[in-house]
Length: 255
Image (cartoon, rainbow, N blue to C red; front, top):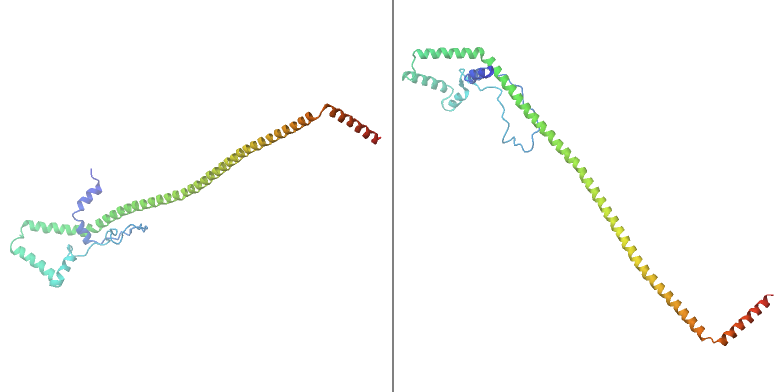
């Protein structure tokens, strides 16, 4: 089922050009909102389409002004009127157009149409213009809301990108932390190698010292044994006697 507004538009659709041309249209007053266009929008070669605020000029209520301007360069100011009068005279003289009962019916219908346009044309035109203005406001509001939503989305994306910069700082800190851990592990292993090498060198040094002590002890024992073996029993007795006499002399000297 069609709505009442749709039926009204369909009923006055054939009269729309005549109503617009014979009535004064009120400006909509709704300009396109000034929204910053993106740099990729080529408004110079592809400007936005705008509905004309005023209808084109007409003469005699239904003949466009452009038709008269077409005759002026060749026939002058009276050319369009003579052409129209001559054309009507030719059509009636050749009986292409006949003044029968249908002609008068047509004149009557045309008079009714003119009366209707003069009587109801301005109000109907104003109503239709208001409807068009309202539709333009709705469409423009939707466009502006979409642009604002996209701009907010761009700002959110830029904010998200700015927040991700902190991840770079965090990654750098983690890299430095890993580098410090690697340096600490490297130094720990260096100390471990140093201790292992020192332990082996200490082992070699202790081995050499033990070998020297053993050699020295063996040499001392060998010398003592050989000396003891070289002393005869008589020499031992004489040595003991001499030692005893020396001890007696020392004790007497102390007294």
